View 1 (cartoon, each protein chain N blue to C red):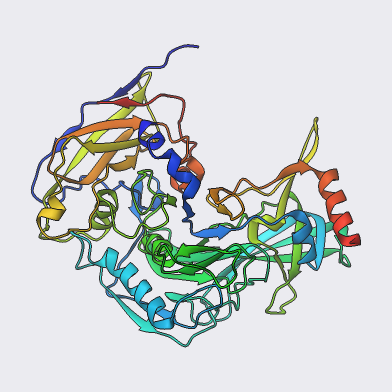
View 2 (view 1 turned 135 degrees about the horizontal axis):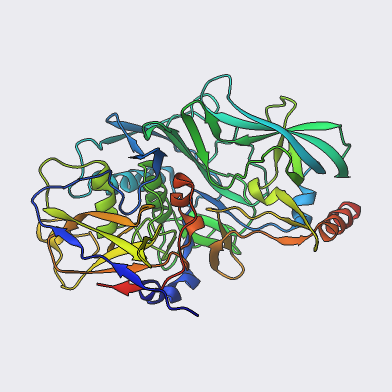
Length: 330
Length: 179
């Protein structure tokens, strides 16, 4: 087999105070709308975003209404309170008695709503998230997260501890906040990340409710804070294979030190992780929101366990992701 | 893939985090909870807001070729969540839309709105796309971006769906109907 040459161009580490965005932010990974040469990341344009929770619980949610409400609030605040984020991201939560998403879809989260969603008992659908986006601008106008009140057996939602159980003994307890934090990342416009330790990675440990560096870079790129809590820069470059740009390569910057600048300024729960992105059709990449530090930059094919099907990147650009190369670091 | 492989062991104990999460349901169960199982060909498709302008649905008209379960009208209109109207797109992972001319085996039940349309049981699970080639006729119900949680094995994987011959699917449905 002919050996293919993969080249990662010298990354340009832009060490500037403040977020440097020389092109639409592509990292970590926002859902995007592509029109010609214009790439618009999905985002909310008005603030505050008001989400509404119907606190009525199904038998599949094994906690009190107060606890369920607190879990959802905490999940939103995890994103809203991220470093370098806001004030364009501000959320407020209200209780809602609405049960009919066909008339009141806007930002409704509920465990018992089914009208118009056509959930059926025993059909194997656990939950559905709906997002409405203007494809010409990327502006999100509404979203909703709906749990099937009568899915087939298998799981229940709890505040997971070592002693958590489900009312039905054969069901497996699943931490609601872990699921909610991830889903709310989608709600704010983030796609799945290829960074394993990120909240937005499509598979997670049993409990993972704290944001990683990758998640912070993502949310703060969509909703930047003018005066950053932690100064960041941008790493840019190009991934080429046989002198042709590679589309959809996962490029990530991994710190070579133990520094955690977010911890140092009081954001004690932010987990250190690589910060990643996927390359554009011409092979270029731009990783924004990178704290000042020393990094190794690697490019790897998006082939397992995270694959093209797990993100909307290929569909947004109407191209097939290139995976015919091996990992290289620089 | 070193970055991934380091953590690959963790996947055995992971949870599904997707915009839509399914638990895989066998064909026999899909048959039981569906009022109709139909083979048909997509004729046309369109998307529209509901009356309250809160949700977009995509409608597809199918010419029915064979009914494996239920009385078969000549055509049915299948309604799915999501779609695009103008510049507005409502996204729902776990839904696969049809292009005109595509063949499918559909596990259906009447929409709860009682508007004369039918909905697919189990989202993409009840939507088998038919592929014809020199090697035979196969069906598959996989969908990109959808995760499946397997409680028995405590594992989460992408929902690849099932692939089998059309004859095998027909036989399994017919057997389930008889039981």
